[in-house]
Image (tube, rainbow, N blue to C red):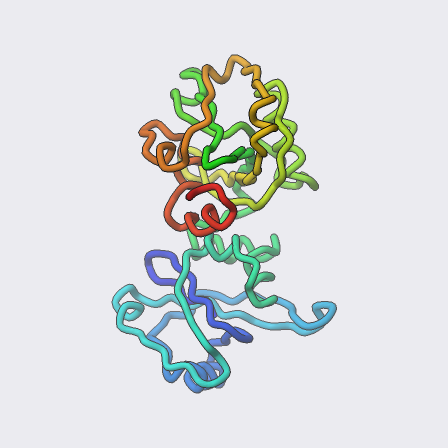
Length: 267
C-alpha cells in the first residue's frame, strides 16, 4: 500500500501489499486493525509471481499529516513490522516485495508516481547524470568545481548521461576518467539516487566506489579546467564543508547514513 502524506513519504508493509477499494479496504482493516482516513489519488497496475504472470493493482492514497501522526496499526499474524519511509530511500533498498519493486523501478510506472511524489523522477521530463564517489580508509575523494562551471563547490567526478544509457555506471566511470585523467582501481559497492538542478528536476546517481590504500597511494589525478582542486578528506569533515555540491550534500544526508556506514564510507 502506498500512503502519501503531504510530506511525501511511503509506507511499506511486509507481505503482499494492500489494495484500498471497498472489499480491499476491508482486507486491509483485517490485516492492520484499521486504516487511516484517506483520499484515493490513483492506481498502478503491476505484476508479480513467476514470470510476472499475475496482475496486481496498487491504489495510491493520500493521508493528511494529522491522520498519519495519529495512526497506529495493529498487525495480524501475517505481518511482523511496518514503517514509513521516503520514496527515494525505498528505491535504494533491495528487500522490497516484487510488487513494490515493480512499482518503484519500472519506467512505465514513473509518471503516475511522479504525479504524487515530487521526489520521484519522471522519465518524461527528467534529465539524468551519474558520478563516482571514491572512498577508502575513512576518507572520500572530492573535486572543486571551478567558478565558471560549478560555483566553487566540492563535488564528485561525473556528468550528464542519457536516460536510456544501457550501462550508466560505465558511462559515469568514463566521464570521471576524462575529468581526472585516470582513475584508481576501485570496486563499486552500491549507489545512491539524488536530485540536482535549479528546479530539482535532474536525477543523479552516485556510485559508491571503494579504493584500496595501495591504489590511492599510486594514483595522482590530472584535473581538467573545470576543476581547480581535489582532496581526500575524512567523511565527518566532508559533511561539514559549507560549499558542498547539492549532489554530495544529498548523498551525505541522514537518510543515506546507514547505507554509507554499512559500506564503509562513513565511520
